[in-house]
View 1 (cartoon, rainbow, N blue to C red):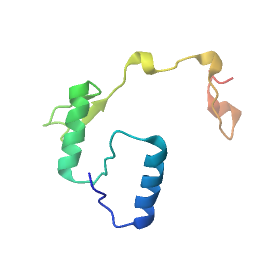
View 2: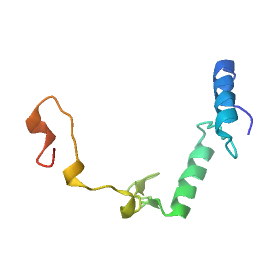
View 3: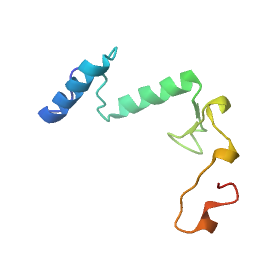
Length: 92
């Protein structure tokens, strides 16, 4: 897909990294409603999004990942906050 920007510095930056990383393809987002629908539908098809009731929540989705992708290891959890008490009970 051709660049959807006239920003030559951005185009050069993308080209420079593409030379290094050798991606299979480069996709330039255009922010259109069609693009939004296409991306959301691809996430529904992949099982990452679930479309919510259109009457109650128009254009809304529940986003979720595989539970195995979540690292829930409390003994390695570190939360940074201005006040120690705000970090919660699981902070190490």
